[in-house]
Figure 1: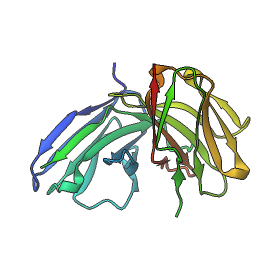
Figure 2: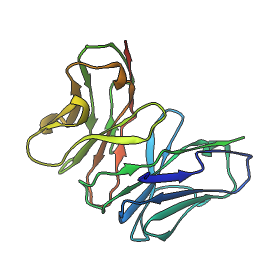
Figure 3: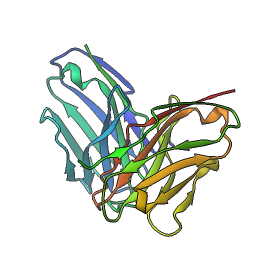
Length: 114
Length: 113
């Protein structure tokens, strides 16, 4: 009964490829997020969706495209992968946009671009 | 630039030692403050949070944090650490209703048995 799940857990690919990471939450939350954790473990928000609507879009290259088919899913598609995209990507969800709302994180997807 | 700073990048303690991890932020006005923990091989989970009321907040596993508005700080404390507290600790700030969490750089805590 995993609350926030991501697939795959590990992803190794060549530069220039296109890949997707999937995220699902079974908490009934309205809001979902993607974070990137770099090699120094620094976590930075990339996107957030509320009720399938894009709310936050940080200065992320447009090679990254999130898609939310429904409230329970937020997928991340990355085109033309670059070496610098290697990182751990975390999905999260929360019961709304309120600043006090706790965010629940998935287990992360470790992306390695060769 | 708006930021969250964690002063200690890597802390090594022996079991039963007391812990204090520093966190400072540079935002004015109302803020909501969080500490998250990431145990080895696991996802981030919430330790505690502050949004109003008593500035001394108690969380899970014996952790507490104190919000000092005048110092823009939200330091995490535990009187006696255990080996199982070995983990990454992240301070985070949210100052809007967009859900945008700004994280500090994280602190690696290693507790020696």
